[in-house]
Image (cartoon, rainbow, N blue to C red; front, side, top):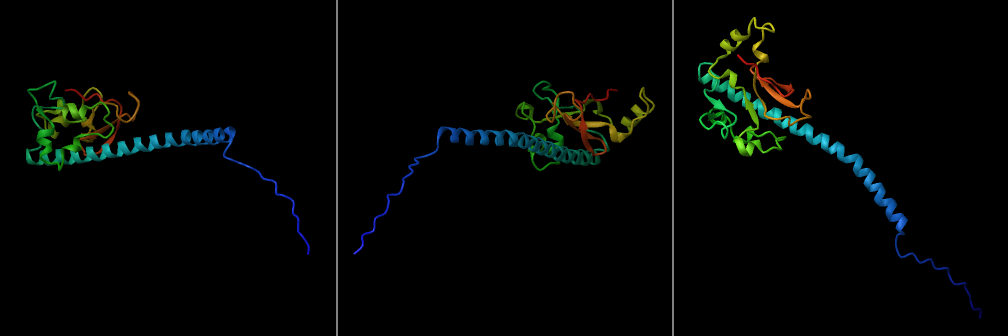
Length: 192
């Protein structure tokens, strides 16, 4: 009878990760996170701008419907700041009749709580109050900077630079009389 003898196996006890291994893994996760977050931020900014453009398109449709119902005259004696000008009618009242929800007046980039305080994140062009499209066009034809087309006359814009750095070319969205919505830079509305 033969007895078999085997050498005992060398045991390698490994209880867990070493401190160095854990630090390397944490470092890799930190680097990956730092690379991904700016992309998320840019995507969120583009989504906010797209939602704002959609809201201004809907407001533009409401303005067109209002003009059609009121002999091409814009809403009278309105403001974007009812808390500052309490005697004026909030622009949300006449245009809100043509919109499905008041949330259309909230820009998703509004982090200044203008919507909560004033009921809108958008600035109404007060200089066109009581004017119709024909009068607006006649007022600017042959002006200091030459003729202006109706399509380039701003109706509403973001109250603040919600979509970029203040003063940058893409900081605000602007709704024009043509119904087009485009980028603008802290719009100063044309004054009569």
